[in-house]
Image (cartoon, rainbow, N blue to C red):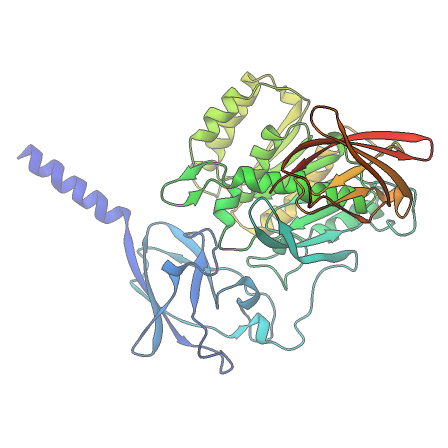
Length: 462
């Protein structure tokens, strides 16, 4: 009898822990391309806009999908990318839809409009925001990515001024409601207001996710149910390819004290991991509502990572998020202290009204930014000897130079790993140098400009 009651209790518990809902899209805009499939993206699939398991099927001519889960989910409909996400009828941003499992077994919903099919859909980004590239190559992953830049108000009027740099994930949500998939952080408006109030200014590099590979790239460890495992390669792209390009072409303060990384949710996870794995590159990290639940390997990695450099870490989260959010951050905090980090290097900012949503991270970005850079004051002028070689690793060509060297003649000597001179040449800074004839490996470049000499390493991959 007792075993039967236990079995009944377990069965009831399983029934209560999961519920099912059938979602039907009963109305769509008349200009919806008939060949385009409809997807649902949300908190349950890493906001992947084209996940094959979440494509709606036509049942009696109505796009339909059945979801199973518990608690409350947030979601939107897309036609396979965030450029083709649903919006309000007037083209304005549509907040995330929400549903609580157990409240209904069927949802009949309507899609008012698609962002890409609305004429005159305007950007909310300030003029300081520029599109760096819609196809920036990621050699470590053999993919391409959209990247935006925010340049400080005085970037073009103070040509001798150099700036800190903040690298942010989920870049389509950073500046512009027109490109976002869940609302924007208003980072451009926040930094503009702070600079007007006397802040030095900061360059922001916003790296878009591509939806399909978001979880894989933002997770250094593999979760059997969700994927992951490409986090190291993604960070190598930022450190070896993107950052050298930014430092070579914009007036940055390239040292770790002036270089920050940040993100939310899975983006918060990879930002925290980056601050440990590349602590020689990133001296600061803003970690918003991190997905520390993803894999326990992060706890092991944090415990094993003894402090090497000073660090500034800002954790931001809400008590209205998952039950494990704040406890997970507190566990990481304890491990960091045990690893040698001081309490003055780590700040936790927990909020009663905090939710796992963009408006919360937008509100908290300004305070996080100010705390991260509060120990520095105004940025000093850089050493004129700054020189950058990118991309790293290189393939067929490599670029050499820096903002102060554009167009200047450079005398180049290339040595192999044994110190033997391979060849000498000269180029102008900013022009490509062909290395297609060299095998993969490590090299040393000596560069002479006028009376100055520089030495830098070069890695070539094939």
